[in-house]
Image (tube, rainbow, N blue to C red; front, side, top):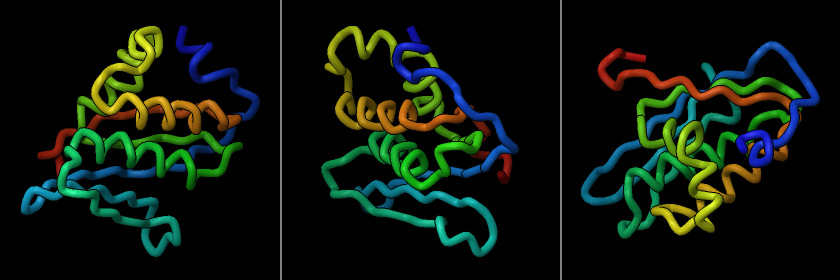
Length: 132
């Protein structure tokens, strides 16, 4: 089922790594992507106050998929178990149910961008207390 969602792999390479972090400050969620020191792809965005930190995490993955080279392996480090589970465990069921889950549209769009990539994507959960 995941092969159908994410599609085949056409390329393998040394990985490109991105670290994603999310935050909630004064009721406003935000996310940041860190690709490395002085990378032009490093970015941060604040969302509208009605959004959630979970939505920020899903949108951060969408942003990473859009900014990463399609033919390079992508490793996404993220401290959100929700993000990892959304893409690695729940995506198939959510697709079957027509994306009627929380953040369904954002999740669907993110998966379409990941499927557009030619190289594999890996999600790696890191503890928010690990200092990574």
